[in-house]
Length: 417
Figure 1: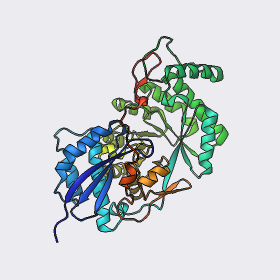
Figure 2: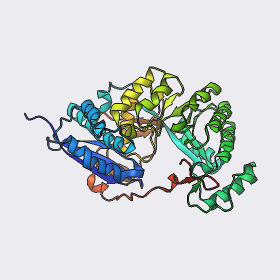
Figure 3: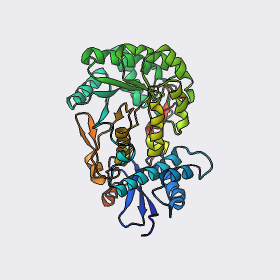
Figure 4: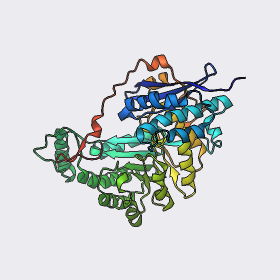
């Protein structure tokens, strides 16, 4: 019997949910045996695809797909310089595909390869957004009716607005809540505008409203998205204490993580951090010094299942729990990878979840079942998700640069998105 080897690596670009996705297909010398992985970096899909096609593919051809750890370690340093988000997403696509392959060879789901089930279902949280407190409240009640016990609450200007929209928002806020965004009358620079001071004043009022109207029977999450100054983040976290958030996400930017020790010393609001991290070592001091409560990790940007499992195990030693990033801009293959990790780690905190539409399910058969706020995996071998390439071809990608990343302050200064 000949030894199994990798014979081809394909990148599949598709956008069935309206968001550009990158999926990797690793084929082997056994006809019909392949693995799938998620390599989606939505803002740079062509860069990731080029990295896979030009560097990862020739590096992998002829290798033994069973040697997952060795392939990860050697691929991670094959370019000498340590990887950033482009190369890590390329590596993630390969890594997830190899775990998918190994599960198929063993006739076992990936969570069994990672140590087996720690639970029967994975608790999920959904996004509840609105232009004002009442709209957010309505969204929460709708999710509660569906059985969700955890929700992320965002209001108004979190996503930013154009200059004219921001002026309209300024008028509405000034009239309704005496909050006045500082809009420059001469601002002409194109972009998505955001007033961090008005935002920081509005958020505590949002949660005061929600707790008064809904009570404490549901867990609230809020994402700062690193969009305010460090001292404003400390003030915000302190002001949110009475409302007992499940966690406050990314209160500071990665460049300002030294501020987390000051924040921790002054507030008991739980913190989730790390959506923009690309290396395990970025979490290391935060975990060791108990500066965070949840690892907020985008698994594909870390490099896949292999490093994510190590990060979760390290965090477990310090009582820190997982909260893998689960937005709409990861493929159902990436969603499955998150869930297999969730099933197999003892220190699961919560899993972010974005609903998968019918077009996505047609392209990616085998998506997890979601019922009453929990996700349930089958016992299918591998990750359990397949791809219909003919269906995927019906949804071409756009490859454009998203507008929301062109963030601006009210005077036109470039800001973090």
